[in-house]
Picture 1 (cartoon, rainbow, N blue to C red):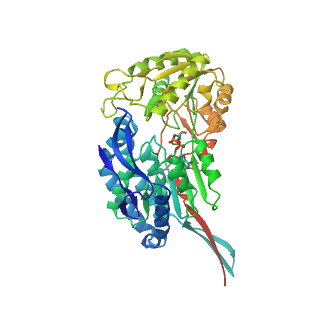
Picture 2: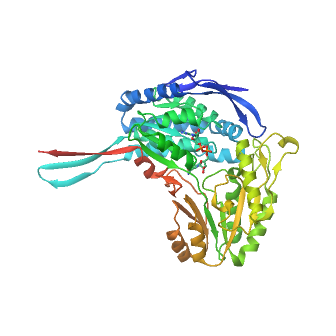
Picture 3: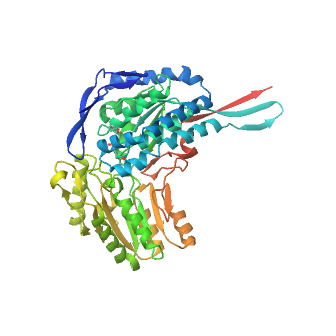
Length: 480
Ligand code: NAD
């Protein structure tokens, strides 16, 4: 069993003060594979103190160019270690290695791009008159508590830490209890890159203990959280100690709309891929596939055919398309939604069962599942399943598609397939979601803002918008 029995606080590897050593489970086998240090409230206190101190140490005095140099050194190390990180993330989260490699292999770009952004930020001068000179500058928000979920730990870490570090903030990172390993590996790279002590601290731990201690801490100036909406509400309720800033990346139930004039092959490929990628455990997946009636049965058949082609199995085997669900609780949740779809009268076209034969016994494997004839008021269309379950909903007209797409508490992502560019503009302008992908899906870059409207969150990750969330604007007004 691998050992990660120390926390990374103030530039040193230390045993937990009031936490514990826990075993983390490989979802492909259901067995423990690493021992990990979990921090308690005192460990969080210590990490926040270190992060606060680091703001007024060498880090706080660095120029943007010096911060950029450190970020690029981190990016180089990240790139050199990407394969090893991807393998570990697959063990921890169960995500297919081919997906982990593609994803983790791109993260260094976040650290590089935000290094350049740091170096090019500028303030403004504000014309007043000959006797008064006014200008704005930007200063870091301060100590950031970064709380990440279990589905894509390293990706969300890059999304939060690259802009926060570029802005000059310091960080306490608390990864999810189910997938803590790669965040500690990341800390090793931070150490090797030479960031001053306390700039990045990594404290895995239980959400209701370490997460709560971090998000309610008086010396944390901003909480950057990705996870469930209910947890975000709890964080808000518990965080009355100071006027800290928040950004929340929460759940989604993205509509993926296929119009009759679309390139159907491409649309079906993208829609099936986005139903089963990460074993369905991604907030931006096209969880509701809206299909125009005239091509509806062809799309249903396409889904059924492609579901049979998905290779489910040991995620560390690079030929496998889909690994297990990341933990047993998520598997039970997905199965209960499948039962609810059947009970509410949706047509189960493919899948729906756990896979427990041979090598898969003990793991949290499930078949890619397709429901047709789903109505938008069924539970499987309204709530986030976070499993590989495609819900196909027929529609007749453009207006009906828009109405169904917007009839959701969520507003994170959406997609549409059409060759009619007029329709693409019309529909995309009316969809209430932070992202609209047209004739593509889940295209994400460091430079493109990502985030949700409605119950899908507050604020944006990635792009210049992300950087602004780690900076405060200061206005200086000088009289002669
Ligand atoms: P979760 O809310 O259960 O946990 C997320 C993190 O919050 C974990 O680190 C957890 O330990 C911590 N936490 C739990 N209770 C806490 C508390 N009381 N105070 C502070 N922290 C606490 O979410 P999850 O199950 O890990 O992740 C799945 C959810 O994340 C889904 O809803 C998914 O849509 C969402 N998600 C959103 C995005 C996005 O960018 N919008 C990306 C990935 C995942």
